Amino acid sequence: MQDQIWLSSPHMGGNEQKYVNEAFDANWVAPLGPNVDGFEKDLEAFLNEDVKVAALSAGTAALHLALIECNVKYGDEVICQSMTFSASANPIAYCGATPIFIDSEKDTWNMCPIALEEAVKERISKSKKPKAIIVVHLYGMPAKMDEIIEIAEKYQIPVIEDAAEALGSTYKGKFCGTFGRFGILSFNGNKIITTSGGGALVCHNQKDKDKAVFLSTQARDNAPHYQHSHIGYNYRMSNIVAGIGRGQMEVLENRVETRRKMHDFYMRVFNDIEGVEVFSEPSEDYFSNHWLSAIVIDKNITGKNREDLRLAFLANNIESRPLWKPMHLQPVFADAPYYGTNVAEKLFDNGLCLPSGSNLSNNDRERIEKKIKDFFS
Ligand SMILES: *Cc1c(COP(=O)(O)O)cnc(C)c1O
Image 1 (spheres, rainbow, N blue to C red):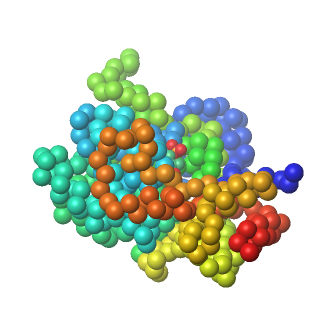
Image 2: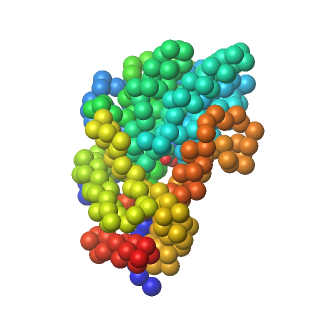
């Protein structure tokens, strides 16, 4: 059996252990310390927009705190992109609120502004003005932020950007995660950089960040004993994990470059294969980190579907994966309202994510290319 080729696996830069060792040497083995502060500073410097970042235990935790800071309560409604990972929507349920799912548009596969406005209008007409809009930058591709922000401002609804997959992506030169009232990042094992597990909340003022840190450390009031007037959470990032993050920040730009080269590779491989489209930026306004490269297969032209290709890869120990199954089609969210025209559903039926890691070798790429050429010939 040939070596496993993963979709996206951790890729250490080299200095991660140095920061972890520093934490051990100074006995900062706790959910606070110099690495947590340093990692936050590194992210703030990278995002370059006068933002304040809170390092947390997961991207999901960051979304939960963003919703709490947007004052989402039991019985409220929150708008969410349907085509995404379940972690975008689960925190809505943690708050006892109802997700309102929005279809994708074809250019970026992200939230369709037309369906968004239709949903906002209809919910308002039912006296259920949404408390927040969660927009996702899928696979690193920036969403249509001008249109989405315009609608959000028109109806005065805060935007939460799920940039878990899009660290390093920009829209009109501005980093994903810095457009909304809040942005969230993830450093899970499969993301473009990883801390093994972790996340961050991107805020635009110190007060919002302080509140996130307060809530993430069990909401302790200022008193010598343990005094609480709010429900708190244990969501702060560990100083060990943050050390990995500091090492990863040193190679982030390189990782973006390398993932983008994987996209170029697939553009070349599929160039002469009719009926397959490689997911690409619709215009110069969009700069994707190409966290995952993905394709859409036209069954009518190729005579093959994405599941055939997935199984052909699998037989060769190459991992690939269908696109995210839209949330409005998930059994757990069967009762949630949905607005759209089934664009996301068609993408799910025909799309496949391909090996995209920054640590793939030339030999790996040769194996992938050969498999693709054999499959479509
Ligand atoms: C990974 C991911 C998350 C969740 O991040 P965790 O750090 O794993 O909690 C949220 N949204 C999207 C779109 C993701 O891909």
